[in-house]
Length: 93
Image 1: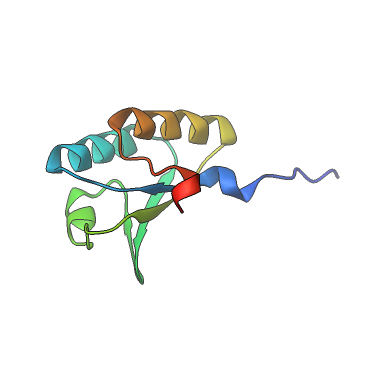
Image 2: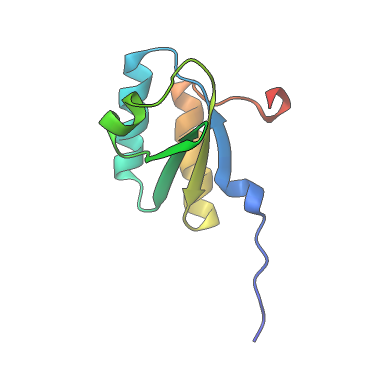
């Protein structure tokens, strides 16, 4: 049996919300997404498909997001997040 190697970085992004509208757009995209979206802020993590969950986090700083799905779906979701304007460039991590 051949193992499939996967770049674990592909499912990791960093986001920063500036407005409530950006949060709503992110949650709408996450709800449409077929995989899992986990948002981390400090020691807390919430489902990215939960508006109340995200609002319970500290929104003052950038957050880590773990996307769990096939690589193609992860890339598509990341593009949608980038279109919202909340994606933090990896150089700024």
